[in-house]
Amino acid sequence: MDEEKRMVDTYEVKHAIHVGDKEILFALDDTKTDYPYMVCNCTWDNPLGIDHYFNASASADYVEMMTEFTDRVQAQLEAVKAERDKITVPLQPFVLEHCIPNDYGESIENKVAVIRPERLRPEYRTADKQLVLATGGFGSHANSRGRAVYTVNLYSGKESRWNREDILGTIKPEHLPDWAKERLKQIQAERQVKQKKYEQER
Image 1 (cartoon, helix red, strand yellow):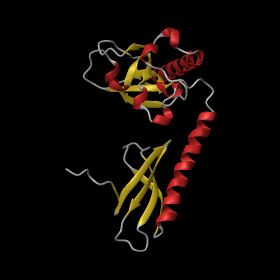
Image 2 (image 1 turned 90 degrees about the vertical axis):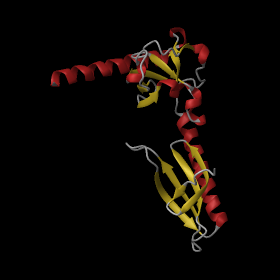
Image 3 (image 1 turned 135 degrees about the vertical axis):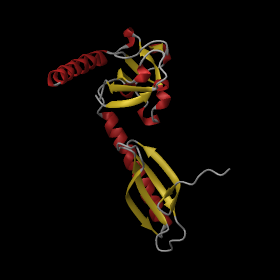
Image 4 (image 1 turned 180 degrees about the vertical axis):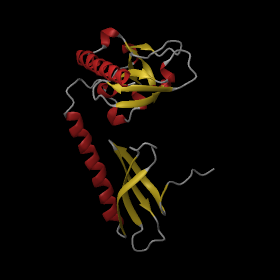
């Protein structure tokens, strides 16, 4: 059975490269003689997680559009490099030997978990993206049928949702870096303040 074609309006996606926070698409609609080739960006950063296509450009010139496609990919690579250059902690990723392996019979709530490298995009398989504080979700509980694990990234402070199977394990105390220890204290203190405020407002 043929794979379902990915379409953007009437254009069929022929090439797609996801780098950083955007996917760059090259698409074709050979029924449009004036502008059969199209390049656009795609993201999923919305509450529903659906494809959001934007910044489209179309032309009858294949070389022009392929150049536009590769230029956008290169721009995304440069943005990732610039983002990485700003990171002030070691990037070496954490592996299984740094962890207490994921045990579904144990709760990981309020523990520092390690995201499996393979669950991250290749350009983001670095320590700053892996270390998270598990803050809740049914998947963080022991022997739970639920999968969702809500987390706070220790480096960026960004809140995210993962599935329990995305977790490699909890970090062994001796492998928790000093920077992560400091950020963990800050995040826990901030969460306590929010919890107290919430309780007072009830």
